[in-house]
Length: 162
Image (cartoon, rainbow, N blue to C red; front, side):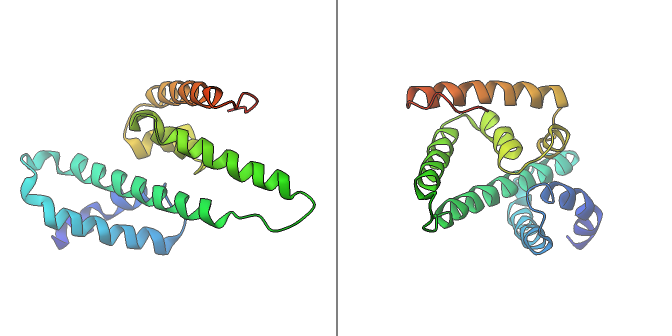
C-alpha cells in the first residue's frame, strides 16, 4: 500500500488541491482517501483501472468536503447588525435558496456549477478535477445554469444573473 501511496500521491494531491487551497485540509482528505482505498481495494475488479478508480474516490471525497464546507459557511453567514441589515438578510436568504435549488440538480450539472461559482475554479481546472474534456465541462455548466435559472424563476427569483 505504501508503494501505491508514494506513486499516486501527486495525482491525488492535484485533484484534492482543486477542492481546497488549505494544505491541512488537503492532507486530511488524503488520509481519508487512503483509508477508503485500503477498505475497498478488494472491490476493484480490474487492477488496470486503479488510477481512474482512485481518481473517482478523490473526486467524490472532494465533493463531500465541498458540501460540508458550504453548509458550514451558510450557517456562519449570519449578518451583523448594520444599516444594510435587510440587504444582508436578503443576500443570505437568496444564497440559501440558490444552494437549495442547486442541490436538486443532477450531480453531473451540480458539481461543475458548484466548482465554478462557489470554489471559483476555471473551466480548465474543473475539467481536470472531473477528469473530462473542456467542452464537456462548458456544456454541463451551460445546461446547469439554465436549469438553475428555471428553478429560481419558478420560485420568484427573476433578477438574478448567473
